[in-house]
Amino acid sequence: MYRTLLTVVLLVSIPALSYTQPTIHFNEVGHDFGKVMQEDRIAYVFEFSNTGNEPLIIEKLASS
Image (cartoon, rainbow, N blue to C red):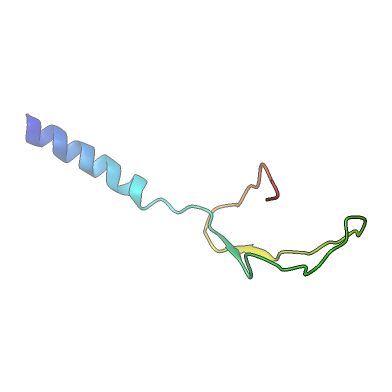
């Protein structure tokens, strides 16, 4: 009985383990702005792409 249950669990788990997911890839992960004064307004665009097979949904962003 134990072997049968273990076999069923493994057979059900294998497709879940191979399930494709979205994967984000950044061209660069950081940027040095150099010396910036407090009143300066600066901006930089980080380019990224989804290298996975599922849609990439970004729900929350935060700066460091």
